[in-house]
Image (cartoon, rainbow, N blue to C red; front, top):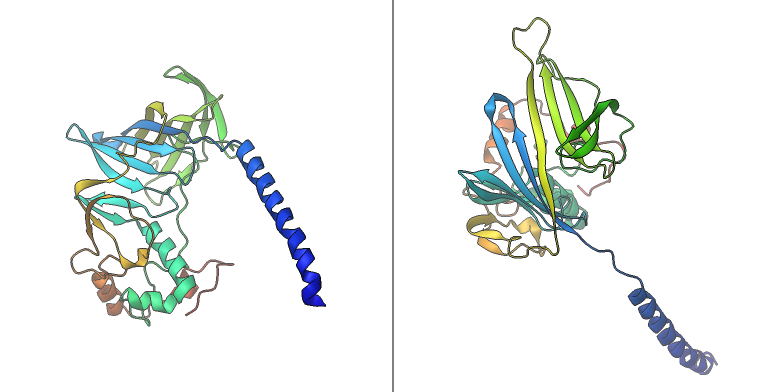
Length: 311
């Protein structure tokens, strides 16, 4: 009875499913996809001691979109950062024409692989002694958050800032806001100010002023970040989002089948490094082994409410 009764139900269900599928497809086509906009942004940073850093950044309105940063060196822009899937994915930085994954990117990869194969296995593959703590890329490590206010960012919430005045910067009408002074050890205190566009909420300028202690003979010193311009682009410059042909790119095994941008000369690790993690941890292991009473990372690094990992 069950088998015979199921036949008309199944026969009725197929056209219903097909109809629902067609309706869903038409509805999906009728809803416009969010438009992704790409920009080029030029920032000039005048740091203390006369140092000037000029950076050109390509980025997207999609937080998971590609990010490329170049720095001006000897009159030429040279690529120094590549994040093909946004800053929360694999991020490579350049050191003497060798691109390696950032610390935050490796911590995220360790977290992901720890959920899949267990934390102890990940440490073992990384060549880290299982009885030695702390592991530098521990999944319990609290990643440093990006500052909410800086030149080139859009800041919607400014409730924590104090309004200092108004100003016109490069033709942009801005409110000038200031964060609460922050004490930096024995060096004094830092006061940060931001030129916030009242229409777009874009920060065009940011300054850090270090005020030394009152008994110090040093004068205050200031760093200034200025957004010179932001230009929209109609499409992602795919010819730019790739590694330079001459660059070495460290692609460790912990990446698994995650895609790696084209270009460059792919290598698995730096000289003397571990192939799974792509870096050399030997000097850090020697240092920790020479110390007595090294604390267990679970008590040092693990934040309250962090996920459990198989050991």
